[in-house]
Length: 183
Image: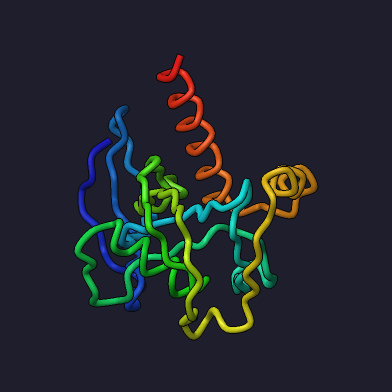
């Protein structure tokens, strides 16, 4: 597929929505809607065989959902690294600071129309501190969920955030690889 040209149809400080004219492999023409967003991070705060989770209100679906802390840089801010952004998001949303931060993988959000990737980190050696929630995060609950309950919440449809589910899969794979390396 070849991009012929494109135009911005909407823009705000957090994203650009564009419409691209494309030529498909068979020569026919079409359009693609693309959302340009900066890369994001997701943090799995792990402690005592469980995870710290947050339940922000998600405007697009009109309800609160349980998920791992996650976010993207504020408009105009370029973090030194994805790890720095992960530490900042963890502290902002939960108040937790981590002594250890391990990169466990990367995934793409809805790449059918969105070009945003996400780096996933496992945070351990956690220390409590004050949270500094952003404007859209006030009223958010933070709680530790034992791993068995986390799995039950997935089965009951209480955890529906695709990023959280993808991060869980990456963590399971990292654990499996570590176990294989130990054999």
